[in-house]
Length: 149
Ligand SMILES: [Fe+2]
Image (cartoon, rainbow, N blue to C red):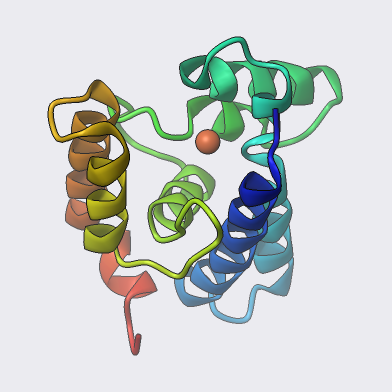
């Protein structure tokens, strides 16, 4: 289910994605709008998924059926094994890892601390996020989105 807290997270991710998009591609308003919409779409699989782990694939499938342009970014978000992320997936994953469970504005470190508190540092969910944030930080696009923050 999408809980009220989750809605707050979704809106927070959408606004963060819009902001990060404007850093990555200044003067491209359509890109920023598209990334806001992607943020709104990214967790809708929680309404239908049997498990938290399945929410990305379930959401991607629904959006593919609906003809949504970035359905594969929704399906792949949070997958720490993905190499060569599209700009859209990069923005979405960064925004997701900079937004808390109730929409808080977080650094990667704060987000990881919060995930560790919920699941423990031995949990797969936590370990995957560590790998993912390391990958995002190592990406050449990371410097661009962090300019003047
Ligand atoms: Fe998600």
